[in-house]
Structures are given as structure tokens and as C-alpha cells.
Amino acid sequence: MLRRAAYLLSFLVATGVGHTARADDPPNPVRHYRHLWTDKDGISHLADCEVTHFFLKSMSPPAGPQWQDPMKPQTATIMFTVQPAHWNGAWHPDPKPQWIIPLHGSWWVQSMDGQKVVLNQGDVLLGEDQDVRPMPSGPYKGKKGHNAGNVGDDPVTLMVIQSANPPTIGAPCQYH
Image (cartoon, rainbow, N blue to C red; front, side, top):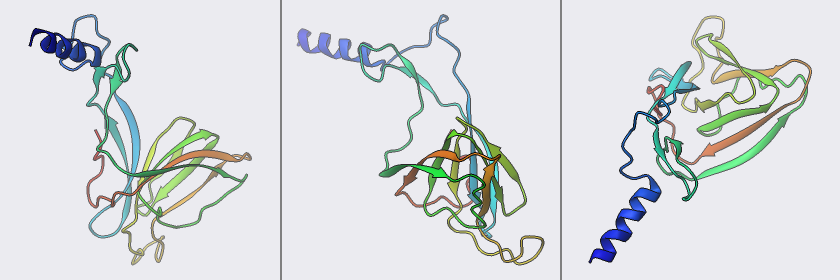
């Protein structure tokens, strides 16, 4: 029994379970991502979201602890894409909920409400505009999803992580 308790205690310490914040711990980080989301009326929007629910834990003892904020498990396809110089994606919805991270170069995304952002190397976008409907009026009449294109004269390399989970409607910044 004592051996089992000692094993459990060493496991908990090694994995960081039960790690209590100490004065010498680094401050809890805050990171950002952009969320291209769809409201209940089928219009896409862009939101700037914060990730703040980190905890300090080793991912693989004896490696030191690092800040983690895991998402719920999901099946995903990971791919690299290279958009040729001067690529323009025209108006379209994302094929699936997908995380997009520029690895080289910059590209822009514009939502149906007119917001436009430029994403640079290391920025993160969650594209979740699958349930959009064509705009009924205004400057984007008939358009749906988002418009996108490269910035500058070079190709843009992206890492895309497509999730098999269904999109969430009307809930910006769901990952925190």
C-alpha cells in the first residue's frame, strides 16, 4: 500500500498534477487568435480572441513544465499549403472548421460584415464560416463566407489543421 501511494505521489509530481502556483512561477500567459465565425443570420464576422486558461505542467517528464491549454479531443487533418504569388481566394466559406497559421508570408481575410485583418507569420486564425448565407444587400450582396488573398509579391505558406468537428454557430472566441 505504501509503495502504491509513493508511486502515485511521484506520478503526480512528475506530471504536474496538483501543481500549486508559487511566487517564482512565471506569470500565466495570454495569447491571441482571430476567429472567423458565423452568426445566427448566416453572416461572417472576425473576432480577436484571448487564450488564458493555461496551466503549468510537463508534457513528457522529466522535461520541465510548460504552459498548456488543451482543447477537447478531435479528429483532424493537418496540411501545408503554398499559395502562389498574388493568390486571391475570392469569396468562399472554409470547407471545414480549420486552424490556419501562416508560416511564411502574409495574407488577409475579410468577413461579410466588412472587417479585414492581415495575418503574419505565427498568427492564428480559426476559420469557422461554414454556415453562411449570401448577403441580401449592400456592397457584398450575393457574397458569402470570406474573401482572402496574399499580401505582397511572394507565395504564402500556411499550416492548416482541419477539424472533423461541426462548426459552432453564434459563439465567437469559444476557445479560451
